[in-house]
Image (tube, rainbow, N blue to C red; front, side, top):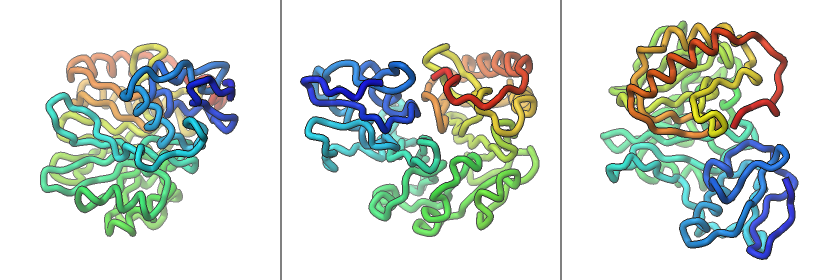
Amino acid sequence: MGSGQGEHGWRVDGRCTNCDVARQLAPGLIGEVAGRSEVLRRPRDAAETARLYAAAHACPSRSVRPPGGRLDPARDPFPMPLDDGDGTATVLLCGHNSPHTAGANSYLLRRPDGTSMMIDTPRWSPALAARYEAPGPVTDVLLTHRDHAAHGRRYADRFGARLWIHEGDLDAAPDADRVLRGTGPTEIADGVRALPFPGHTRGSVLYLADGRYCFSGDSFYWSRTTADIEVVDSVTWYSVRELAASLTRAAGRLRFEWLLPGHGDRRRLPHEEMAARLGRLAARTRELRPRPVDFTAVRW
């Protein structure tokens, strides 16, 4: 990716790690060029400028730079509501992705009683913690797997929340308050359950909420390249065969319309279409064989 600055002043500098976060938030404005992100064109209006500022405030390497080079805190949109199309904001994107989680996305799940749950963790700072708990108390910090465990204890302690992780990845958060076990579902709270999903790591977990949301961690994601749900078989730390088994067990049983991964893009589709795509993904994954880890092979 080039780090040159156009006359509009926006640029991506050489610290970019190609994590895809900026491209998710500013599609058409930031794209992948030669394995890194690059600003493709100037923003045309205030809405496009806002998308670039969102990308800049989320970027884990702080590589997306505005004109003048300094980020304006007043242009920080996070936590940012994800539009349900009905004016509600049940899920908010935390932004401020952490370099200690490889730039993973994290989310706030708002509950009907005014409390929230945090799924995976953004970068840590007391100021950010205050912002995330401003809408209401955060009762639980739900970790999808070991790669996203950084800052979990700090956020849980700040919120007075319970920290959750699966026993398969317990060494990444040995002081967790709640430990998920086995492969059966566990109810976290009314309408929210954990489904262990070994594959990407031994202790990977899906968190499912209200029949609408699936927080998938790194188990599967929406790929803009293939326009479909995919697994990251080139970065599977535990077992691609176990991942296929997890998908096979879940296919046809999971009901959700929002796919909200840690890495890769988000997508909303009707329940029936999500279920059909998951079934086909399970069949494709059963055909995969173990391969060496290769971050450059991810199909964003």
